[in-house]
Length: 446
Ligand SMILES: Nc1ncnc2c1ncn2[C@@H]1O[C@H](COP(=O)(O)OP(=O)(O)OP(=O)(O)O)[C@@H](O)[C@H]1O
Ligand SMILES: [Mg+2]
Image 1 (tube, rainbow, N blue to C red):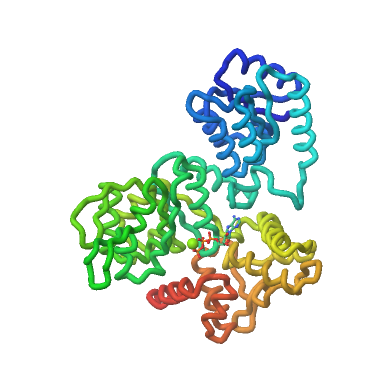
Image 2: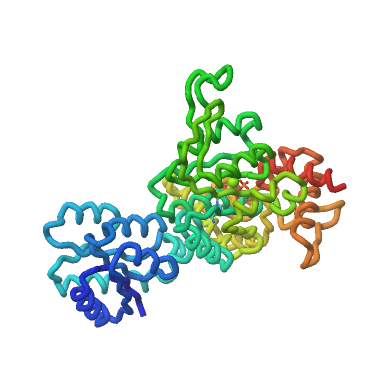
């Protein structure tokens, strides 16, 4: 049975409208305000949302924008009085399908509900169309149970102010997940800033994060606001947190505890309201045991840990992702190239050590080579079901720890490319830096 969420604080009107919607064979839930509706939508995506524009705790448009930013594929109708014509026009521009006026036009309501139902059932298997609600969250695509769990965690974490700690292999989508947490939070209209702690030289990270006062050092000709101040009210994404120098980790912990920063060369404490999301593609516990990450900082950041599964454990998502990347190329270039069933099967049989990033690159590569249909032969050379190890196939028994398998895979690929690190990183779809980090780790272990 199709479902509808009715958001209206006028109880008498809502009860009458709910009854009419039920007569159209919809199951109806009602709620009286924006907050309550947002809570409902965290674990329930109705086929239709009907929302009054004037609600006691805000405007119905807030809900409309939220539904849009979450990419919830639901039909949205606003309920308005005639006097609110301007806001109705704005709502229609924001993607609302139609509006219902008060007092109610019964015919119109029926037409809207019937059209929504027809489209929902017709779109049950949209192979090329936009994903259905549970096939994605904002920019994230995937309908595997691992991805659905990820969406649920993101939606749970988002409305809180807790720090989120994202772990997962390189290319699994940590940065995208971080931006989804921000987009689903109350901070979504404030900045989302990302800093890669591994990419900024150690001596510059402090000034990048906390800013500096004029004259703090020779080149400091003017005062500079750091990431914390620029992200005020919003979210700061600290990528590759294990690469942050230890003394700075102490400072960061202090900032998280006191919610104040001091610019380099300054004395004044400046209050900041910033939500932190940190990420690493290393095992954070191992990073602690190696002395790269302070345990007290990890505990502080781990308020809400989220692990993203590697693509090989959710190969059911490969089709949706490949279609999405191909659609982007087609839209950009005005083409209509397709993915053949053989190519899809081929992609699903590969282990994707570079995860979604590698898949995205592989689709880009094949798109260029293919005339109209992407075939297995169009994929880059590195995309082979397995790589040879001393002339034999690299074999692994089920139950082998991922880290061990990853190490053998990386070393075998390096051998395959006769020690060429750039080529190895490209084939694996990981950054050169990540490859160096892994090789250093292996060297330290031996
Ligand atoms: N679920 C997904 N749906 C759509 N695109 C995705 C998804 N996951 C990852 N991507 C895309 O794959 C690429 C890599 O993602 P991202 O940069 O978020 O990975 P990462 O985990 O931060 O990697 P790294 O550890 O190397 O920094 C990006 O282009 C991103 O848009
Ligand atoms: Mg990243």
